[in-house]
Image 1 (cartoon, rainbow, N blue to C red):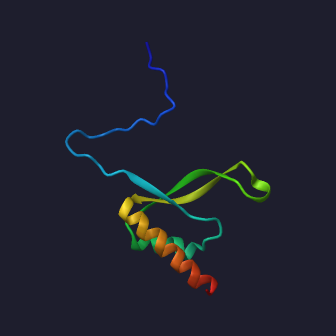
Image 2 (spheres, rainbow, N blue to C red):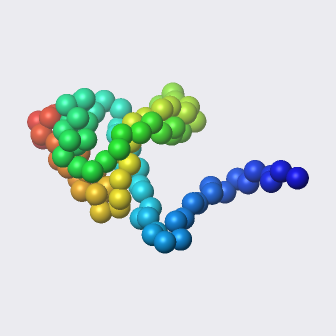
Length: 93
């Protein structure tokens, strides 16, 4: 008899070597490609597509595909700070 799907994500763990969980840093719409490419070259990240519900203006509940940087937690913190620092420079703050 086949197993019934569950709503909880299935976590695969290697018994010999536990891998660190990965985190997604969402890239806000409008971030320049140059900044995205710079982060991809500077940090150990994977660029992935991620569906996210948007809740503002006339997009309340719309689901959009956004880019995200997938990486380990300590790298995610660095990437987020770096991205916002670069955005501030880009917009002239």
